[in-house]
Image (tube, rainbow over all chains, first blue to last red):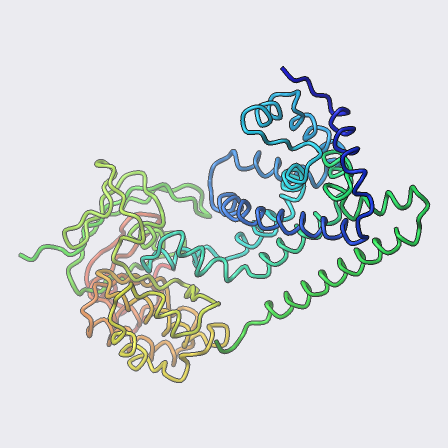
Length: 247
Length: 238
């Protein structure tokens, strides 16, 4: 029977990666971009049915679910990171099961970062979608049903096209929020170069090494990227908010 | 004696501005007739249309339309809205903002449906020049015509009109009453209309149900329900 501790894992994986320290400067940025893209795509697939259910279900339990989804917005990232680390650790229940039976390890790996980011950025996708669904007049949905259309057809052809700006907001916020993660990725990822050392961690590392110009490069790129993303969102939302006369 | 096209019976608790009140209604309607539901706000008029279309649930009730049971709480039958052959014109029209006039109509068609009826309705409702325009750019009267055409395009067994003309000026209202009458006769549609407007009721209805706090206060042909107002229409009881 193997016995794992978190420190063992850090040491093993870090030392294996130490040889690859001569990576290009772009790698942390590329990792951040990859993490944010994968997280956003998965979040969209999870959040659409979840937000739809929250918007239209009459079950009382949905208040509890909404509170759970929004928790990462108010919790210190270290709290979420700590519990995820415990849950993913191969010496505990879930982590042990994944490691033993499915050969999946989530601590200090890129897939682990993705799973942690899904929890961390979930409210940034679900909440805009939920507001979008709730802002639509109920008669739109009902009119579609009276025309013989199913719930799925109504969702795809009527509801989603009319909450385009909420969709865009959810996608962009989730992407940007994942790019900006620090506490959770540090705790779950362990800052392993080339594997879990994303841009936000790279800035911290360079700062600690007093390599201010490298830190500045990462910081400036993230700053510009975030600004451009948000500017595009506001521009596109401004365009969507105006009704288009002709099709 | 002819079999009624619609048999309706429902029992439901309504939450109104007067507090809780019981809706207890039963009526029958023959093929091709136009029934108007008349009464003060909160009387249960719109709720009856919503129950008929399956959008609102009832505590107890039975709805049979053209021999098909759409609802029977005793036998736990509740046909979903999309399987009920209805055309519903909502008070605010509920046109889909992302679709043009023509796309709104085409959306109502089922796969393989003949598009000739759509072209016919566009012509009948004088919507030709507006086909590619989105609903936000239409006047109230134009939106009403699109909503009416969209509700009819599936050739429903039952047409439900929830105060569709209430927001329009007198001239437009009269023109649209003509449209409704023309369409209804043309396609022999059994229709239930919610209206407060007495001239409109006298002009369009074959039968009137005057509702008062969830119960039928009076029922019959419009001349019988409003005898003193047939020549000098004025809204009574509201």
